[in-house]
Length: 86
Image 1 (tube, rainbow, N blue to C red):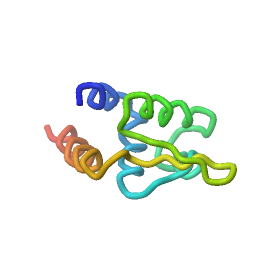
Image 2 (cartoon, rainbow, N blue to C red; image 1 turned 30 degrees about the vertical axis):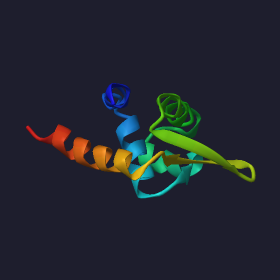
Image 3 (cartoon, one colour; image 1 turned 90 degrees about the vertical axis):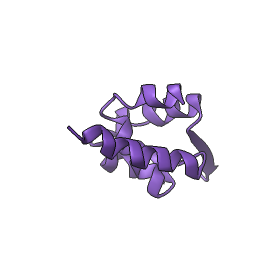
Image 4 (cartoon, one colour; image 1 turned 45 degrees about the vertical axis):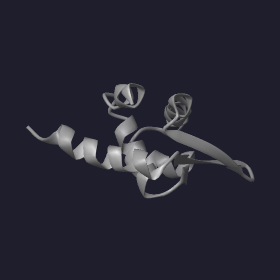
């Protein structure tokens, strides 16, 4: 859990996690959610796979990223709006 929350301060990762909470996606699909250039996006799902909230499966030439469980999706969906409260 601590590792997951350590990933949230990066402004790039919460949008990626939110996108994955809605549906499994390729890096190409995550580019729009991450609002960064395509060459920078793959490092974020890779880091998230390393701490386990994200998993990856190959589909042909693409790697499809998804959250490891519905519990992770709920944590993300609850934590991000809460972090925006002042």
